[in-house]
Amino acid sequence: MDEIKSRSPYWLSPGIDVPTQEELQLLPSRRALRGFYVDRNAGEAAFVPTDDFMRECPLWRIDVLDDIADALQRTRTHALVSFFRECQARGHDVPMARQIEAFRKMCQQGDVALPDELEALLVLDQQFGRSAAWRPRERGKR
Image (cartoon, rainbow, N blue to C red; front, top):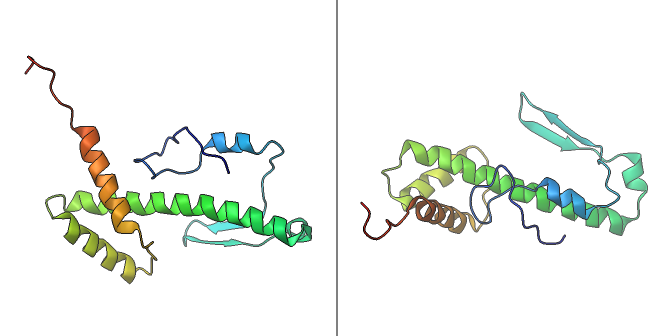
């Protein structure tokens, strides 16, 4: 998929965003893919491919599933960073390394798999948040 320039309304920081409606413009003959199911109460989900999907050639199915997996992974990374931010708000005076360690333990207890690059993403997100909040004063003004 081509590089997308716009941010979603859920953008958190560079590299931490969800797919946007603009991405649909890259799919001129787009249609919804049926087969996704979710139990909102249990927080569980499944994908059961339709007969139409399974009739497509295997390479097409692989390509489509790879695109879906990428969009899901981006959305999952966004959720992980959002969850870390929620946890971080409770212990904002705790050093970052300890916050990440506690977050890893909490996720491990909840069987939440974490990507290898999680620590780098969280540090970059925090640094971006600090730099975005920091505004130098104009000369001569207080």
